[in-house]
Length: 637
Image (cartoon, rainbow, N blue to C red; front, side, top):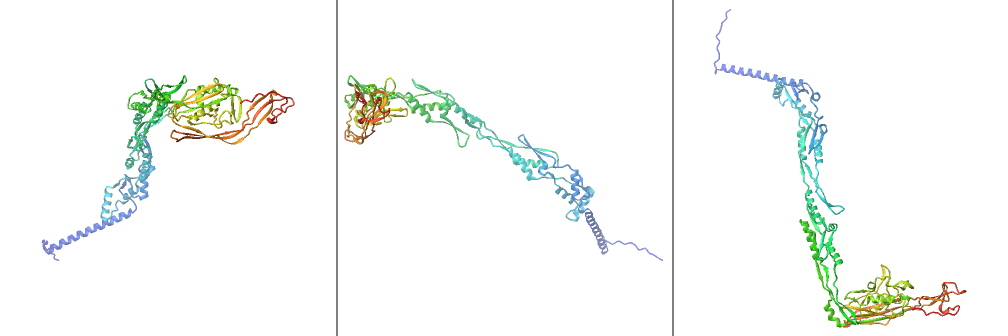
């Protein structure tokens, strides 16, 4: 057999043969590449299916290998290997005060959801190429998932904020109070504290945002909150007040001096805090200062003495006037205020000037001398009496008459009988009779009988046309007095008395002259006649009731001896009208003096003879038959 060997001929590029060869080579490459891709995809899918639901080999979390473990197994492996993040503590320091929060209290833990999700997701990319690439990298180099921490942000925020806010407090302003002695006492101010609560929460988050199991501590910023009113401000105000009131103040004039005690000053001065706080105003009350000066003036003022008149040798002569002196309340109050205000500004004033002013008389010597020739007797009244034990043998009438003689009643002044003649003491007054509870007390009443004097003064003043004040009739009518124009006086106690009074409504002083004569008393009213006239009506008498006289048997007297124990007086009511007119006929006063006189049955006691009715038995005097003849003394009265 014969073979031949043909020469090998190569295709020339550009020839159709060459193009064919290149196409075949490219096709071969593509087929090979596709085969590789198909193989890789098949490998990746198979590899993933083999480890479905498990961590791929080469994957760890925080250094804990989890290859081939499912999610639960992986979590158990992590917790078994890594330290617990809930066993530690977070210490919060706020201005040196600390609070400890356990990690478990706010759920600090590994973020398993995140970490396991990351670990389980390795090699399971969104497409086959990336998945295959990642699987190859993990097989070759491995892959580590970082640990992550989580906590209950709401719980941690609440706990941190609660403690931070508990260390906040408001400032307290200084206050001023007064103690039991009236001294001003300062209660010191207290600084407040504010806490950066938001910053504390932020710092807490930062402190626990790691996977360290160790305790950690944060420092929280605080700030001082100053009070609205500092201790120094309050103390300064209190010190000012104490400077003003802490020592006595002397108030003095040339010959007068008084001291205002510190305790008194404390009642006049006070500190008033402004409505917004932070400031005090020192207030010095003017009214109590003025009252103090006025009260001192009542004690030290010297009243001016008006000129007046007196009787001398039967003639009316002038008594010279004199100037008075008075504390000037307004000026002295200003001086005291100025002294206290000076203390407030740092002055040490220990005294203030007592301002005095001269007070001239309203009726001076020249005035009196000018009208002296015009002084005349304006009225006069006389009452007769029998000196007896009933009036202290006339002593109780003579004494008040002597006291009143020469008494001057200034224009507008009141004459009060009991005030002028008092006090009624023994001596000089002696016991006499009086009417008490509509019955006659025959003796033992100090000053008894002086009503003859008061009734006489009343009639003289009333007939002079002067303004009558107090006047009251006796319980029963006494015949030596004009009907309806008597004036009783008496003193039962300090709060129970009856006087007789009148006011001098004449523009000039009136002078009262008292004249004692045996068995009679006279009062005259002297003054300048201003032309007034006095008209008295006749007494109008009604409700008359006759009295009876009784004889009463007694064992207190010797047989047949008589003694009057009550007067027999008929009762009635009376009215007397007085009309006073000025020189032009105008009515000045119109008074109705109304008197209610009670009916008083007379009583004469007579000593019993044997056989007479028993003691205390009464018979009408008209029916009485004496047991035997006897001489009866005349009744008293």
